[in-house]
Length: 191
Image (cartoon, rainbow, N blue to C red; front, side, top):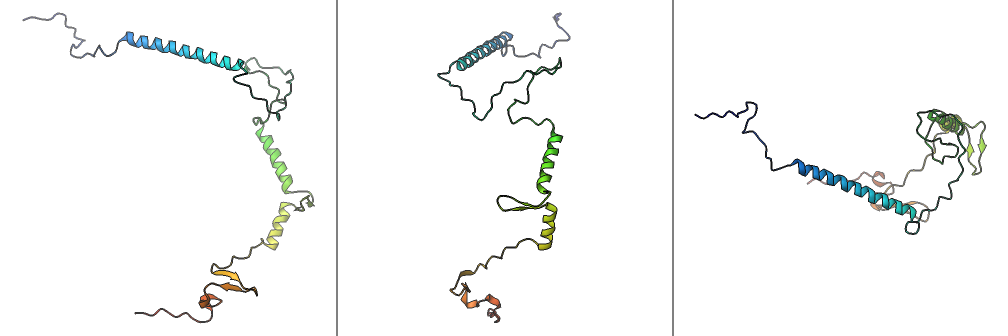
């Protein structure tokens, strides 16, 4: 009886993987090729953008907006923190629209302007002829007088008016008041 002395108790010879599928060399060459292609693409893009920035004939720069005011920024003399990594910005020259910095005070200003519009100190007439009164007085007037009412629409079976101004009705058998003209309608005969 022959014994195999090379048998390792921790290794099972029947459990293995296919060694022909992947090789470390193939994966490494693919990654190196990918890095080389990435660097090449970055260099091509850098050169292309540099060429487009310098070429005014092929890629003309747009004219600045005439509405934008160009002002020179005054140097900021306020001390800055050591940890601040952005350059100093002079907010008086920064173009509109700006981000909202003090939202509570901005909202208070907006609320005050709206209240001033709703509650003028005295009634006045503007250039269009409209009279402006405080909102509380306007609400009292609406409560006393009521809201304006539009006349109701004519019935759908009205066609036109006659020369005397009377309404001409399409269904002339029913009479001028329709089914309720004083005569009851005949009930349908039962069979």
